Image (cartoon, rainbow, N blue to C red):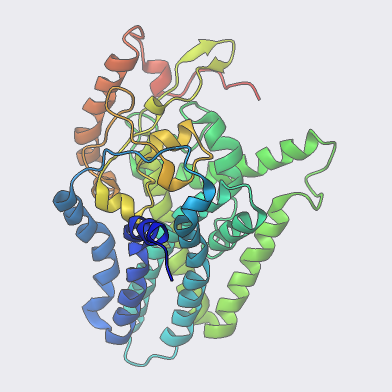
Length: 378
């Protein structure tokens, strides 16, 4: 018999399982075809934007000292997603390449929707998994990233982004006035290079070459190769092409979120190649309830950078006095980011207000805007 305590914990965690509802929706669109293939993007962007308006903000915080055994339903959520996404992705490749009722355009639309899921949910869950100490969870995170051909994100995120966020050395920190369409190609190029260089430097400190088996890039390349080979085996060249459509869509979704999370926010330069420590003020925060259910509290990003090892249910919401606040959740903000004039109109005044609030002593922001300050020391 289920205890009252177990039932209560399950009910508290249940809203975060909403992502699993996207799977039957995706399969329905595959069977229905036509304009229905747009249902998944509409569900993740527009539906959750509307739900944010209906459900409001969640300003409450869980006890950060909650024991691990009380979080089992949250931990199971991210672990369970991995086989679900794997079976869905490759099941769709097998099905779509044999489905005569789907036109080529409909198949592309279907895998665009799959990419929205593997980017919005899959990469986000891999982000949670890669931050954990257990080998199983890290491996599961690697499998999710390999499904979208972005395995180096783990190295870049853990070794570069968290260390150098808000400084010129972090490719992912969007500069003030940098539109997304300039940010995106820059990040694709720089993140791969910075991730490889970070792992190479880590091995060098141990007296090892980058070719050593300990370099995780060997694992990344092997997993990605297996994912590509399986797509080719199940669906031929068409299946491989559809796999690439979903991978490209997922990467675009990730980098849209990365763009929003730190736009225009800069750590104060202290001189001699040093910057102040990372604080909640260096990430944009969003307390919108429904989109935080979908994104497992990713929008509490200020606390994630402040305390990177906290599991998602324990992430704290920081008020405006401690962290800058987005006017809307990520579903709305990522759409706005695709329209640079709209984005600048919404966000540039907020960045300037952030500067006045937290750094009134800095009168010349031009070096920060152009990322011309000296690189932090390794």
